[in-house]
Amino acid sequence: MSEAKKQVPLRISSKLYEQLAAWAEDDFRSINGQIEYLLSECVRQRKKTGRHVPKNLNEKMELDI
Image (tube, rainbow, N blue to C red; front, side, top):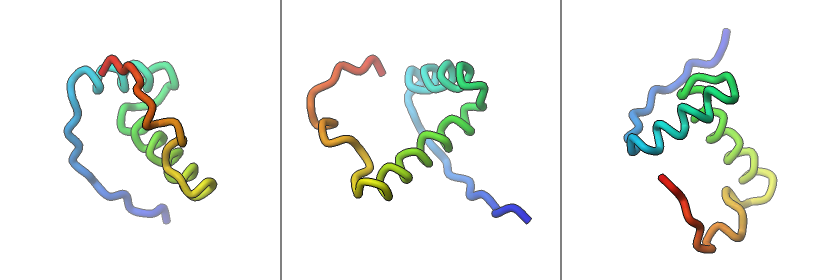
């Protein structure tokens, strides 16, 4: 039997939602599937390197979200 999934309410801006939706469509995933995929990748990265984000994340980046 597969593992039961937890439901987590998530509030994000409509602009971020639109960008995630477009990305999900490009990857042939649902928005929920895309968010789960991205979170899983972050957890894998953290297990692999001990960091959940790249070292240079603190550098100023221009994000359109």
